[in-house]
Image (cartoon, rainbow, N blue to C red; front, side):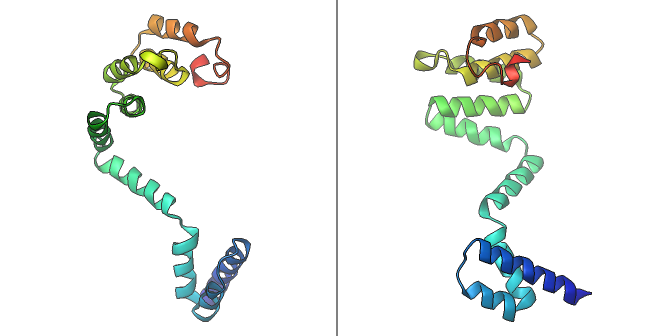
Length: 156
């Protein structure tokens, strides 16, 4: 039984190695070191660093839910940019801290970004979830002529 599982793993790793055009020494590792070579190949080439980072961030969010907000607050205090403020606002919205999200979204709507579609749509969403439907509707009317509006979540 184990022989067939290892053989199937070897076939998968060999196929993956062939389709991704990896270097030839992986073939030797997969064939001559069946289980160890396949596991090393899987961890190095199939399970990519981005996937591991996503899992790690998910675990961190479960263990310490306010870490993301604290990190974004530090980043925003270091450099008060539009991008940092919107990212912090998104984190507040995700954490259901609607008042703070609304404050930050409103602060981001200045100068060149006064009519930014993304920020206005998120501001509308924050007002909606904080049960201020009239204000939410006003912001929806403000962006309803934007081409992205009909396909966005804001239109609902």
